[in-house]
Image (tube, rainbow, N blue to C red):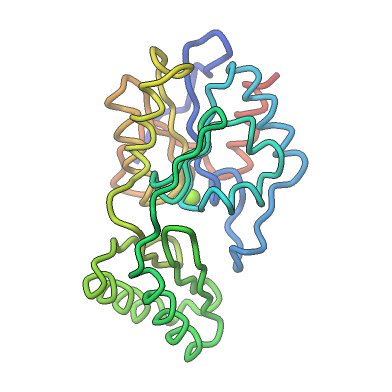
Length: 246
Ligand SMILES: [Mg+2]
């Protein structure tokens, strides 16, 4: 459990780079992930932070780049993007997209069959992953996790449990790799990374940030965690970003 308040705040001259998860960090988690959209206040905030940090701002998400473009709108082009758990990138206008494993198509069919038999369970098809969401059907959590974990083994995909969701994704990437890759390049090279996230998948980002003389910032509470600092919720993250942008 982090026990520190996050001070001093990084500012434009402070030599920090910011890596932000999206869902549960900048935006509250909602029942249907397809309905998530960044409001104008958040878009404006991210644009101002990117300017204050001279472009040293990245969104690092389990969402695909295509989803991030839809959710963030035009400001998605003002920040570095790492999508699909570090498996695809768009930095300074240059994109990298690996081939999608065919096993994900089979996984999608199998998860849809599972969801069809369970009212309230949703399937999210991503570029490099397929996720089962059961926020509206919490009673199936154990069964859903076991099903997805078994499917991961059968199809040679990576199993990733999350908050009221389980995901199958392309093996090989994680958010820590995204941080390390971005920190090796201008404009982030030579600065200290702060990684802000709320979920299991963010732990790799916290570890990478710590290893690179930076730190992780956990949104909410979890234990154990590699994060050094914590913020209570997305509203607290936004207030902290507003102070950076001011
Ligand atoms: Mg998250």
